[in-house]
Image 1 (cartoon, rainbow, N blue to C red):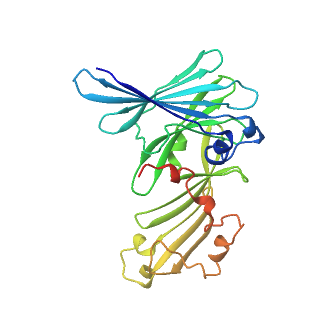
Image 2: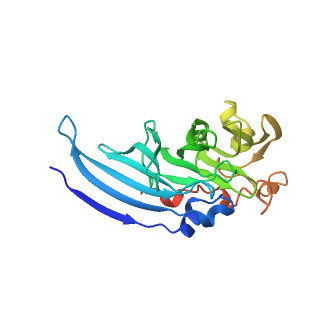
Image 3: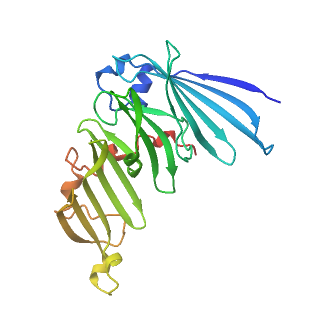
Length: 276
């Protein structure tokens, strides 16, 4: 027996630009986005009840391309998972692409997000991939102008808690776990997201088993690619807190600086979308 309910949610273009498209070019004003949610109940071959939900989005990759429709199919058995995504040209109803994502975990309110991750003026397709106690990872599909399709960029999964720095055209990542705090910057080049700059610190005791004063300090390292820019030990008892009064550390926290580690720019762009 089947039942069907329908809930329509309309997202204005302004909201999409402010929340889901933080790094788009001036074509944002021409991008419209809407979402419809359809839920059906079905039974699989083992007679186990399973809900299938469809989230439908209208979006425009850039102002020169037609409006597309994105249909995300969500299965809800033991946990919610995105099973399939279809891209259709809205006006002609022509199928453009079918994406079958790898095993994933839907931990956000929406199954699909759109943002300019490559800073080329084209929207990319972003879906939730994995969430742990300290990080969230997403899968990204980049628009290929030649193929006229989205192409998966597996390297985006390595960017935990991603944030977009549209001013400097970088993807940012901040993570704290296992007594290690890291800040990373990524750029998109040659079809990959490349780690360009990093700062991280951890208790010095993690690197030495010997009893010494070093166990009451944090090891702070900055790298430009693989090149070490700064490597120092700073006194401190809290493994997650660095002494910003230290003259070598304080420049990293100056507002408007290259790193500006205390800035909200490091906050994951999907943080408010997580399902509690």
